[in-house]
Picture (cartoon, each protein chain N blue to C red):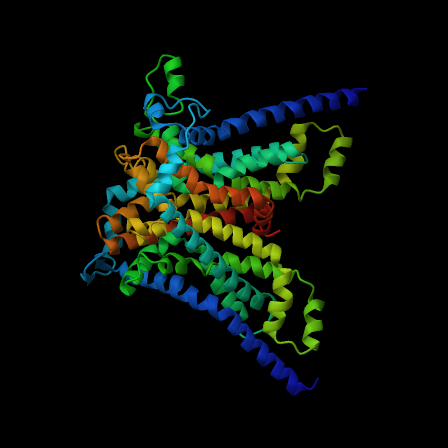
Length: 281
Length: 296
């Protein structure tokens, strides 16, 4: 009898907690809903009042104006090129190095591994200034090369791939070794096809990181027509005299976030799995 | 297989390994190892961003740090920011994780909502929150009018500016630690909870006796990641307050950025960035050491 009562009470508190969480989640989303609503209102209305979470009166003018302006689409293109290239390169070099550390025996393996892991401790702020002078010396600022290359050798990427390759049963490789397959063949034909989940996770994280990268693009891509969308948006807000009006600023923020939010909604399963994986489980 | 062919196979493997490591290694050395040492070298110079003025001055840049009041102000601001964000972020992430952990479609949607704000870029987040907190047309302005108050200019207020940046950061960053906690919660064996249920343990007792002890390693991990991450705060302060009002929100990375790219004093800025590096390393070590001690 007592236990029936406690379990009833428990169900009520469960519902209360859930209700509070839902309310909090709505509060959490309000800024985003508000910004989206503003991006869909005419500037004249926004001059009068920015209040309200519904886009009434409704207009698409802010987005149409954005596409005509050509700056934001150009920034988006740069972000896309940089993010896709960086993701591909990170996947190639991380999976190769991860495979070597996971499955091959070679002299100085421990030393090399420690040298790589030590890189985890170095924050980008410790190297971004010398990196800047180095790239200046090459005369390569305001290029995609400069935006991508310093971000390709990521120790955590190698670490993730190594963890994954270690979990692949050894028998799969040994069967191929008997057939005198080379290491490269084994890597390409057996290991890589198996590593789709790990590659997807690492790829997603790299893409999101690349898209949102701020400090390095800010100092390297200094010409307005080489901005990535993250830096471009920053330049718009530090200069609030943006001639196109508040609605257009909000529209560019929404526009810039759309690819990454879509990616998140489609692949969120992998992203959450990736967090668990990087925690070393 | 004969001994000779075994040795040959080993050699082939070693060669293959070095070839597999080469692309990563070359890029790693060029873009991380070399700049790190070059940075040490630059920090021993009076070095200008443009032009070719370079003069070896030994440890003078490091000595200058001791008497630079803005540097210490920035260190203080950064520590304040870390103190404001790290405990609240960890606590909020844990509470949210506990609230949204479990089966069901609704909980899945809630998880996505709390995680989603972390995929936005810093310039989108600061744009949104500068608008929310604005005293002219912010989200709270109608509310202030309703209670008959003049809207508060959060970002221009000497004591409210930093908490506002911290709040923005909380909204932006809680997703990742929450996901780490969710992963840890799913690792707790169900038998532990079943035993507690048989004992009619209260919800609070279960949390204190079972859940929290089981995820204490994750709590430590989150704390370390947060300290290291929040130490690097730059974009929020740079874009929302530009370090103002009266240097109240000028952070270390921001000061490094300004010294190097606005004032062109590359040598001095590099010396500062090594200071930051050591500070972060120190905190991480301390945290790990405390965690290890707690385990014994």
